Length: 190
Ligand SMILES: C[S@@+](CC[C@H](N)C(=O)[O-])C[C@H]1O[C@@H](n2cnc3c(N)ncnc32)[C@H](O)[C@@H]1O
Image (cartoon, rainbow, N blue to C red; front, side, top):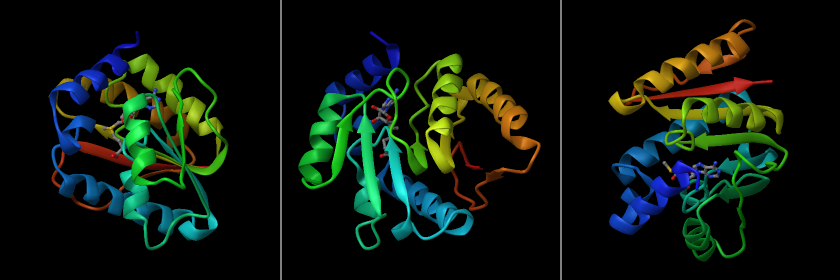
């Protein structure tokens, strides 16, 4: 079994609430969602005009965050069945799918959001998955990645990859909001 699946299944067994997803707090999760929304509005356009893939959606809390201004189309996918079930019970009419975006074909949309999705992957898996998601996105990809002590080396590899693939033509924009977390957030524009 892929180790990122095992890691999330273990979190799910041993922790409760938002910690099951690997987040520290609801406040931090909401701050990320706020920053993601700002990046989309500023660099791509109004959410209401866009199709969005929430890659590794967890409980689809991003859709809850967007309750007042939902996107034109939202697709949430996750590789953990119990997360998908919970997301579906919170959003009975939403399009939530069991899908491993590292191994299966992701849906084609305007914007893909990877909020914490890459954090538990090995460095090479992160790069393969990012490239697949980029290929399936018409306008942009948003990536947030934990860069704390356990992920430091992976992050440098990812940052080198991002800079060499996307840095040259200024299609890679770093989130400008200050928030006190060991995390980087970028939007990659097409
Ligand atoms: C840190 S959690 C964040 C969940 C959600 N994006 C949020 O912000 O609340 C990362 C999520 O990515 C999912 N994930 C990790 N690797 C994945 C993959 N290869 N395919 C699909 N989902 C994946 C995990 O199951 C987990 O739900």
